[in-house]
Image (cartoon, rainbow, N blue to C red; front, side, top):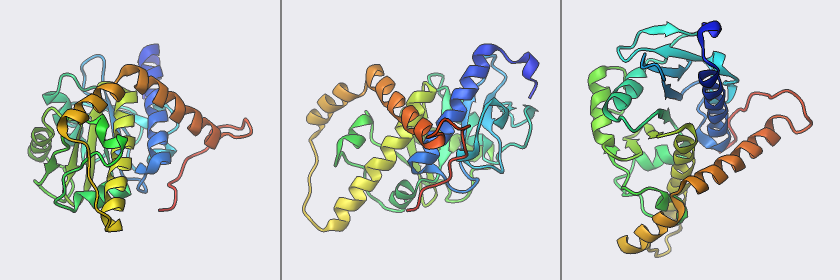
Length: 254
C-alpha cells in the first residue's frame, strides 16, 4: 500500500474497517480465512477490500486492505484480492447510498439460508430491519463473475442484507458502524428463530404495524453509536485485557 499517498482520513477509516473485521469475528462471523469487508474509495477509484488468505480476526490495520477497481483490477495494497470481489463492485455500483459491503458465513445465518423460512421478529434483533431480508437463489457457489454479482445486487434491492441460499449472507450499510451492526443483529435474529422453531413451542411475532413502531424506536444513529461503542469496548478488553498489544481474534466455538 502506498502509505505516503493515503490521506489521514482514509487511513483512519481503514483502521476502523480493520476494527470492524475483528468485531465481526468476535461476534460469530469468522470462518477461517473466508469472508471479506470493503469500503468505497473516497476518490472514486473503486473500493478497499480485506486482503485474502487471512481471517477477519487477523485484520490489524490499514495495511491489510487492497484497493480494487470496479472492474476487479488491484491497484494498491499488499497481498491478493478475494475472488468474490464482484459482490462488492456490483452492490456499490447499484447502491449510491451504500459505502460498506460485507460477505461472511456466520453459522446461524448460513443454516437459516438453507431454509424456506421468512425471518421474523422473534426478538428485537429482526426488528432492526425495515425491510424483509430477501434470498439470493442464483447460485450456492462462489460469486466470482460480474453477472452473478449483478444478480446478487438486484436480489438485495433496497435492503441492507440478502441471504445467499446454502452459502451465507451479504450485508451492507452507509457507514462502517452500520454495516457491522447489521451483520451482528442478523446473526442473532437467525439464531433466535432457529432456536424457537426447534423448541416445538407455539410462537408468534408482532404484526406489521407494531413492527413499524419497534423499528422506529431502535433504528437510529444514536443507537448505532451506542452499540458500536459497546462492541468496541468488548473487543478492546478481549484483545488486550492487561494493556498488551492487540492480538488476533480467532472464532469462538459453536
